[in-house]
Length: 178
Image 1: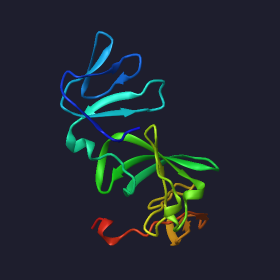
Image 2 (image 1 turned 60 degrees about the vertical axis):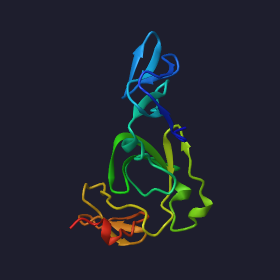
Image 3 (image 1 turned 60 degrees about the horizontal axis):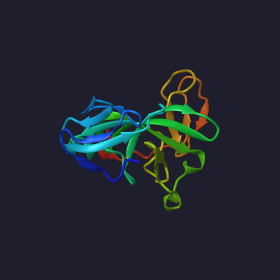
Image 4 (image 1 turned 180 degrees about the vertical axis):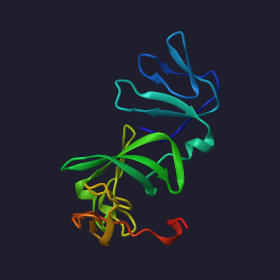
C-alpha cells in the first residue's frame, strides 16, 4: 500500500533485506536497507517475491497516481475479464517509475463512476473509463493500422474497414497537441 506516505531522513533504517529489495534513494548495509536521502518512503510490489523499497524527494512523491487522477496508459495485455496496463502519465506529467493498472471489463462504461471502488492493491491500480472523456485514445487494428473512432463505442481500421468495439475517449481540446 502506498498511502499515507512516510517521511524519512538520510541514514534511517527502513527494513530488513529479508523483507524488501533496495530501489532508488536507499542503500544496503549489514542486512538492512537505509535511506540515503530525505524524502518519502515508497514500497512497491512489482510482481517479484519481495517488494522494492525506495525513497523519493517531495516533487517525485507528488506524481503518484491517486484516486480521481486522470491517467494515460498503454495496454500491455487483455483477456476476457480485464486489461492490464502501464500507467505512463498522471495528468500531463510523465511518470519516471512504472506503475501497473487493471481495467476490469465491468468498469468499461460511459458513466456510474460512483459505483466503482478505486483502490491500490500492491501498486496495481484499478482504473475505470466511467466518464465521457475517458476511454481509448489510440488503438491499432490487427492489420497494424491506427484505428479511427466512428462512434463513442466503435473504432474502424482504415485498411480493412473492420470495426471493433472500444469505449472511445472524448478527448478534450486542451489535451490535443497542436
